Length: 415
Image (cartoon, rainbow, N blue to C red):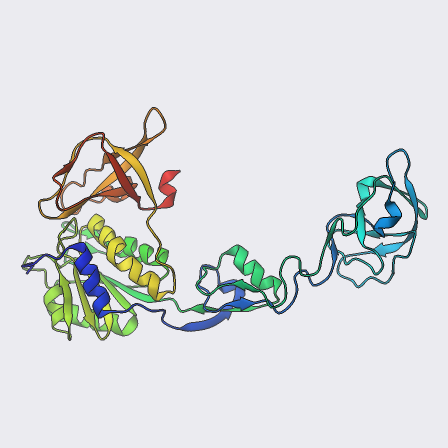
């Protein structure tokens, strides 16, 4: 086991050589269910938006030429000729010398070519006094000014948020074609692992990884399917993995991948089909025992049991695969520049990832301070870390005061 540790880059190349991540298919769903889904087709407008010339202010629809010369000391007097409200076809027309009361969003009546704001007018019985001239098309939003019929308004691959769904609704659509969400089976291994909500017996710890990894799956655009905790037993693991492969598009396990007598996951993976394990050990710290297998055309990521290691390796390897299966763009990790608070050493021959928390210095810059990971199984690193820095395999250390790039675990960490 781990006779040849792969570089991180080589591990990624091997994974992509065996598995070509593509969107899993298309489904049409109600618009109100399309939030945070990836659009699977270009959307072309079937009508103009707005579909008619509309007023952008409350006031009076007029012929612009009738207002020329109007000012506060010399108002133009026009004839009141009716009211135009929202949501109705105007029943009146504006002729020379006329003015129709209109509200914001209402259609411009026939004959009018401008709107005078109500603040610049005064109505006395059937006469409207205009105190400011308007130009043609002033305070009017023309038909098709926002979206023109035949225009491509949304492109394939865009992530649908509230604004995009609003655009689809404006076009009269009630459904959207989106890429299917990849189902990701998540399971934990280890006799010491207990599910939250149960009484914790001596020697047991609650299952951290299933919950942190399931949430990471959601953040990546997948749907986690939590299958529970399984003992380090080859027969039980075979059953669990067969069920996981039948239930999901990708499988994430944690624990049981090191070299101890209870670490049966790699052997179990190889017993379930070819090619089996395609990555078995990566020259990184943490995460050295990471194993990746291909079974029934599906990837199985078997991550270390240490919670911080599991989440880090998920971020490095599994997250981009899930994003591609969901039709999403592989998001670049947000980064910030910071100054190292102290000397940080690398593990010999392995790319080292150091979890850090960020603090502000006296001039407002960031300082990256290592978060002590403690012994195997320590969990406080997850809560304390804002991000991590990489130290390459050929460097011994990063010196105190040196500028480093911190890859953020979340954009929220900046605020």
